[in-house]
Image 1: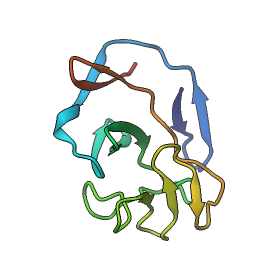
Image 2 (image 1 turned 60 degrees about the vertical axis):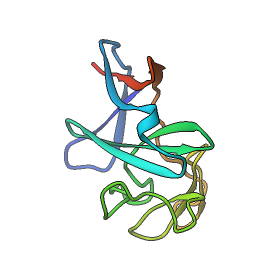
Image 3 (image 1 turned 90 degrees about the vertical axis):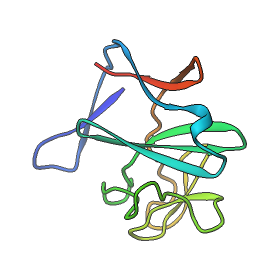
Length: 127
């Protein structure tokens, strides 16, 4: 699904994604465990995080205030590198699920972005 924020509101509207050509975001070997990489695709901000060799891809939007999670480029993890952290209010999210386990958005989740790995590259499909 693609999420589009309606003008003059904070409500998100879901639209079915129309599949087209894949876009390569990164080589999977270019990101180390417990590191993150952010991307901007038109108006959509995304970030990837790698944990135990597994990649996860999320929208860079906190479910609490609908604002970006980071202040510093590519900095999305807490000091220990165990959780995704919102720099705005300190909410903590599980890397594997995006679930908020601490903070004002407790129980809500980050929006996961589906992806494929082809020829060593993390790819998404956009319309």
